[in-house]
Length: 252
Image (cartoon, rainbow, N blue to C red; front, top):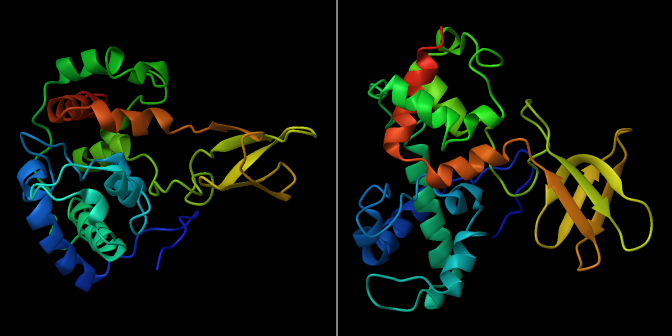
């Protein structure tokens, strides 16, 4: 059964689904994406894929498969059943949790293997980090505040939940704001409650709840304070990641 992503929603991994999904992955995906789903010569890292991180029970992986995605067997990905897609989602979410410190399979490695000078150059250059952050401002002393593993996790995944819906609610930190403008009537701005392809809802400054069915005439403008971090996941390399960690660790 598909679940809607919400403010406190996360993909609950089914152990039996993981084992079924492992077989689907081995038969159709391992050649391109590697045995750990961390990427290989012909395919990207799925553990850091925004499609996987946003996915809930095949909600995002399914459309990719239905649209058409190369499979190593040569079969058409659109022919995968919904059950196979959900099992594959279970397996990939299981691989994601393996990278988290809470996973029983996780063993923290030395992440201070980068070049702090290169990290500083990336921070101020291609990483575009300095557009929002400053070594002498909000990040002053950050190297003394967190251990390297925690710090790396925080700049890669600054907010615990990455669901497509409900980014504005729960978990503390910065809130995602949204402005909805109907075809007739005034625009309404507030904290994003949920958003998907069909609906959008928010709570205004007075705490009042508003919801709309999405249409071509409904304008929706989302102001997500974590957008730059999500986009960074798509382009940052392992070297960049370790260089940035070394640079941030040097900010004592």
